[in-house]
Amino acid sequence: MTRWGKEPEGPKLKVITQYWRGRVRVCELEKEGKLLDLHISRVDDASDWNIRAQSGHAETAHVFSECGTTRVAALSAIASAWVARAPELGLPSFDWDAVAVALRAVHAVE
View (spheres, rainbow, N blue to C red):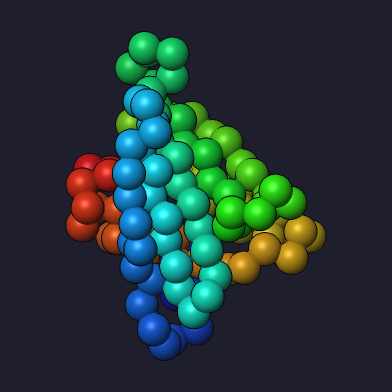
């Protein structure tokens, strides 16, 4: 079992695109048609980081936003919020350890 909950075995989660929108790094991830968009940025020129996660591109997508002193800490906070609310909101489950690995591979988190 992973830190954030077990995800069924199968195709790997992958970063399908990444780009900069101003000072925000956007990483779009996908697994079996399930989308996860992560927007990674500094908090108002402070040393803290913010990650905003959303369940796809639709206007009705659920959005979470969490901060941390590092990008990894912000990702951990997002993962915890997502896992806690996923059943209630009907969100797809993600292996957040795999999300961290995918983001490390593209140098979005360290």
